[in-house]
Image 1 (spheres, helix red, strand yellow):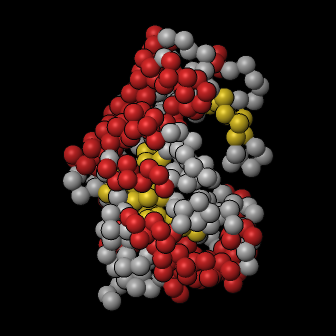
Image 2 (cartoon, helix red, strand yellow):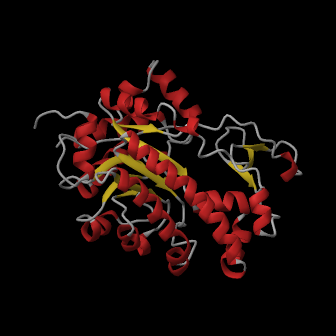
Image 3 (cartoon, rainbow, N blue to C red):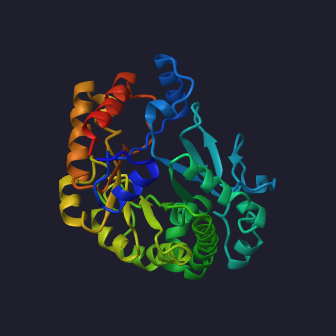
Length: 352
């Protein structure tokens, strides 16, 4: 088979056709990346990981809003939305604090210092960055971050958000619609700039099932995600839609397909049966991820990692339809030897 560019390879695979090799994406927490580079004598990870996608994001806010009045704890950091966090020593896990937890009315939400998500400068250079990714051969993925549900609970708190959905729907509608409006505008801008895929993420499942009932998801989340996806696809009808949720999402896969999802991620092997999901939905969905970071990567031997990668490729990647990746960033508990085994196995078994 003729060698493809990463751009061609990803689009071929995600359109469920057979590429020259299985496309890949590999990322690390900062501490692990430094360890791998030191052990292997690398100054650049790209020749080692040989990733096939390049992420493109809307620019961060330039505003320096003061959210301190929403927090009483010491050591709280907040991001451009005002979401409070107290970080662990590695700067990876955090305790969340919720600036809108004590809001009582829609007026309280309207008075909140919302970020300038629609300011024109936030979209400066998007087309150039997408074009640069394409010039370098990559598929461009426009990232929408914590898309709707995750952003909402990180502002409001999980318990308050669920209570709003049941007992104070006006509050829930106001919060979720504001976030959705921002995300739809970003999706439209990213699609207009020429990204190949938009990536949305809302963790809505646990290890053994959904954290929100399917009826509530169909009432509160899925119509809003569809609005976001439709905004992007109106700009570019060929746009592919990537949905991320950790955990066991089996029950809502038909709903995801109905709202326009093309790519399911991360297909955790500890939660989702790869053979079942490929046989049941592989004619309508492609898959990104598949490599277990809770199981084989930290706890297996290099030989077990190699066998696991082979199984993922042969199952999820049969006749195309797979962008192979760890189901999460590679954490500090993964031996470097297992990282090497993973990359070597992708090279060996991923050939078309």
